[in-house]
Structure formats: structure tokens, C-alpha cells
Image 1 (cartoon, rainbow, N blue to C red):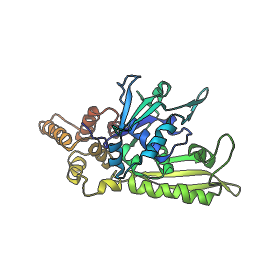
Image 2 (tube, rainbow, N blue to C red):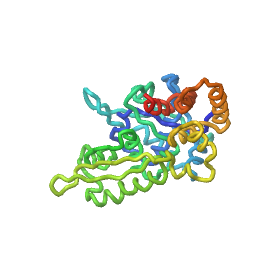
Image 3 (cartoon, rainbow, N blue to C red):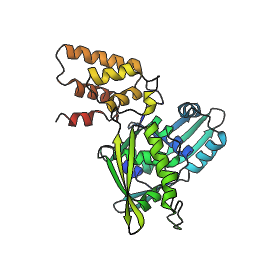
Image 4 (cartoon, rainbow, N blue to C red):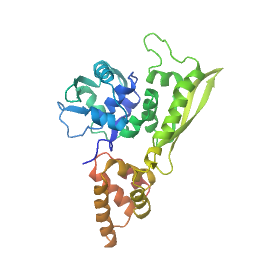
Length: 315
């Protein structure tokens, strides 16, 4: 079984693009919830987030008062999702309960949010749980999701006002704006996110400003998936470099595919599957070992997201 850390989060682009306000702690709880979703889940299923798992992944203590506030606030947090016929205002969580003695948080999804989280075939965003948790700023967490949506195209174009609305820096009701001075917005939000994402995730980015008159009104984010597909966290001594090399050299996977396999499966399971593939390849039963390996691991974990892209390279 995969560890809590080794999970891929998948959500509709509509949620990625939604406007909502959440603290960093609230988003971390949501990430832990989303990482548990499975398309076989019953609509009435409740999900348990273990505080010890969250603390282990964050490598820091999570204060009880922060969790209590997080579970209370999540009930009232609203996503504003643009739909063809209007604006959907919906909460993610229908109920939240913190079990003091058990150290768990029990969460239930709002039934109407399910189409944006389950059985997604197109127009969805994927990103790594431990990377989303690793970045500290709540704005960095949001930007990691938004930029992950455009990993394949390499660029995201957005107006400054729309970005601030998504980050809840402009109150849609009152129009009151935080970081109205663009240079302050750069220092407190954009540059912090740039540093955190470069250090702790699988992507890095730069951005260019476009002015209308004298005012910066639009931004273009140039997104780069790191050449070796690895975050700096994955370059730590504990990371299994030997298996990473085998996957990229002997089994013809790209760096980002190898990383995704290693953070989503236990070492013993990876070695077992590679042994099976190696024997099939030796017997002449595999024509394209890279595509076959990617497909084999994709079949082991619904939504891993490594086969479609490599497959397209061989079409």
C-alpha cells in the first residue's frame, strides 16, 4: 500500500480556477482529504485525516487551536466556480469534526462538489500531495495548483485582477484590495511563491508584466517542469537514486515519470514490477519498454498520469 505521502491529487480545472479564501492550514487539511478520494467511493463516505500523518509530512507540530479553527472555517468556505450558465457558489465540506482523543479529523464532502473531483476524464489538474504541503505560504499553495494546470503548455496568462480574486486579495463584494501597490504584491506573493516552488516542487516559473497605460494589468507565467522531473526535496540523500537511475536509463522513462513512480509506490512494489517487465523484455514480448513500463505502473494506480504523455511521444 502506498504511504500517505506518496499521493497524487486530481481535481477539475474548475476548482483550480475557482475563487476562494483558505488559510494554509485549511488547505493542508483539504489536500489530505483530496489525496484519499477514489472513484469507487460511495457518496456518503466520510474521510479521516490523521493529525500525526499531517505533522509527519509537514515535519512540524500542528497546533490544536489551528486545527479547531480550520475545521470550523472549512464548513463555511465557498468556492466560486464559473459554469456555462452562471456562477456556482458551493462549499467543499458538508461536515467537519475534530476527534480530540483520537487525533483525527472526520470530513464529509458536499454531494454537489463530486462532479469536480470524481471520474474526471478531461480538463483536470494533477499535483503532488507532499509538494503542495511543503510550500508554506497560502498564496504559494494556490499558485502551485494553478501553474500545475499549465505544465504541458508551459505558460499561463491571467489578469492581475483575476489572480487577486482567486487569491482572495480583492473582496468581490466591497472591492477592497490587498497589496494594491504592485511592487508590494510582487514581494509578498509572486516572489515568495517563485522561491518556494523552485525549491520544493517539480516546477519553476518566471513571470512577465504587461501594462495598460502605466498600470500592470496582466501577467504571463512561463512554467518549466524541471529537466530531471525532480524537486529539490527528491534530491535529498533519502531519495532512492539507484531506482531513479534504473527507471530512466534501463526502462527509458523521463525524470518526471520516474519521480512520480517513486513517490507513489513502495520500493518493494517498484522492484517487483521492474523485475516482471525485465523478464518480459528479455523474452522479446515488449517492443517499447518505456511506454510499456509507464502503462504498467499507470494500471497499478488509477490517475497516476504518466502513461498518456509518454504514449503520445510514440504516436
